[in-house]
Length: 302
Image 1 (cartoon, one colour):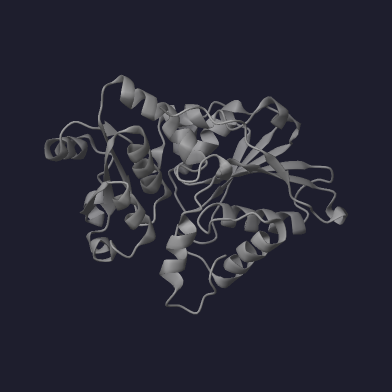
Image 2 (image 1 turned 90 degrees about the vertical axis):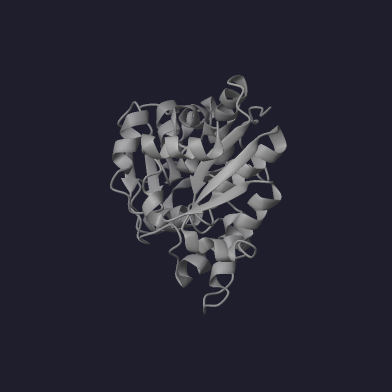
C-alpha cells in the first residue's frame, strides 16, 4: 500500500543579490523514482480507494509521453493492480516499441489501447466510460492527468506549516489538480501562481471546482502545447541542471522556471519577496523529449 511521503526538502536557489529575492524549490521530484512528485500525491488516496472497493484494475488516459501513464503503470506493478492505458492517437502504436514512456508502461505490464483523437475527446463522457467497461470489464477509473477530488486531497499535503514563510508559491499546471490542492492548503496572505503548460480555456473552471480560495492566478503558456519546446528553453534547462544540479523536465517544470526567471529578471516581484517553486517531478519526460528531438537540430536535454 502507498504510504504518505516525508515532507519534501526545500532547496535554495541562489539569486543575484541585486534582485533582493529569496527563491527555494520544493523537491517533490525526489519522492519516488517512478511514481514521481505530484503523481504520487494524486495517486495516493486513489490507490487506497481502489483497494478498499476491491478493484483489481486501474484504467486511465494519456498521451504518448504522459507522466501519468508511466506513474499509473508503476503503481499497478508495485501495488498489485492490472492497468490499462487508453492512449491518444491510433498512429502512436507504430512507435510503441521505441517510445521510452510506452516502453516503460509495457514493462510494468500495462495494457495499451490506442484510440483515435476524436474518440479521445469523449474520455469524460459517461457513455464512453460505459463502452470501456463493456470492453474491459470492471475497473477503477483514473481521469487523464489523475485530477479528481482524491487527487486534490493528496496535493493538499504538498505544503507544510514551515512553508507559510513564503509569499509566493509557484507550480506548473497540467489538468489543474496540483494547484487546486496547493491553493486549499495555502494561507490567505500567500499568492499562488500556476504556470500553464498548455493553452486550456477550461483550466479556470476546473480549478474553481476544486479550490476554495481566490489567492491564485494562472500565468499563461507561451508554447501552445505540452510537447512544444525551443532551443532557448532547452538551453535554460541544461544551464539550470549544470548550475544547481537540479534536473527539470521540458513539459512542466522547465517552462515554469524559465518564465519565473524572466519575471525575476524583469523585477516583477517586490524586493524581499520569498518564493517557493514546487518541482512536480515528471523527469521521465526527458527521455521522451530527447527521443522526439533526435532527428532535429535542437540540442539534447541533460
